[in-house]
View 1 (cartoon, rainbow, N blue to C red):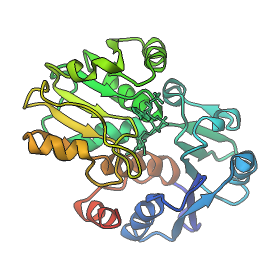
View 2 (view 1 turned 30 degrees about the horizontal axis):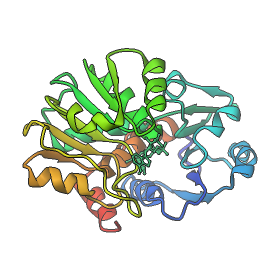
View 3 (view 1 turned 90 degrees about the vertical axis):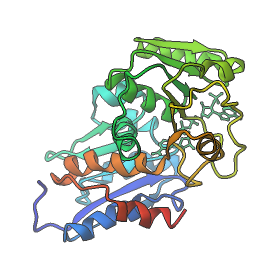
View 4 (view 1 turned 45 degrees about the vertical axis):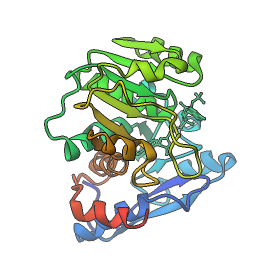
Length: 280
Ligand SMILES: NC(=O)c1ccc[n+]([C@@H]2O[C@H](COP(=O)([O-])OP(=O)(O)OC[C@H]3O[C@@H](n4cnc5c(N)ncnc54)[C@H](OP(=O)(O)O)[C@@H]3O)[C@@H](O)[C@H]2O)c1
């Protein structure tokens, strides 16, 4: 664990950053654990990312999270990138090592798979085919998580077909790519549907997806957390599906970050979830 007599520091770098709920999450945990420390929002322009990351050791930061638009650029800056971040193609968490070097990892997939049991304790990735909409950074974390948990069939649809094909080629394994126009049919027979596009996010249109072919017992997940419940989640609830909202993915990805930064495994509690949901 980090030196307990030291004021513990971590933060999130993004541009913009004011919308981030991460400071609320991590500062809740500092308080819960009675630790002297803080987690700060760091508004870092893309041109300043290198200098900002390189300053972390001198500032005695234990590490930081990265959000839009820094998750790819950080690859060129940190000293080591682990296999998970390489595969996902994005760094979500930087750890300052004792010698001052920086290592990059990605905990988004962990957040995705650990959030699901909070809503569906009996969930298993191999219950049946999983349909994933999207092929951006979030979708790559979702697919990685599903494969990690033993999914045997992933049906992938993305508006830009080539991007989905690239994802499938890079990941290998049981991923079948379908044209975007096929999305309404692709969900037929699926045990899970996950939206990893930005459709349904505040300021965006709802995901244009007809659910009539989705089996009633299928679990419907959205990784978007603002709004708290997307139109997809609302539509799925109306059809009687069990649903998984996106906030918990953000909350759970903080756990491995804390383990790496401070040697502590914090908890995602209903109280924490409710407090952050109240701000959405
Ligand atoms: N809960 C969490 O912890 C968490 C973590 C990561 C992301 N997210 C959320 O997930 C969402 C996606 O993030 P990201 O990082 O994956 O973004 P991204 O890399 O920019 O990918 C955006 C995805 O949305 C698709 N898309 C955009 N406009 C579309 C449209 N009009 N119709 C259909 N598809 C469209 C894109 O398709 P094209 O390839 O065709 O452009 C792409 O698949 C965001 O809302 C983000 O906040 C949540």
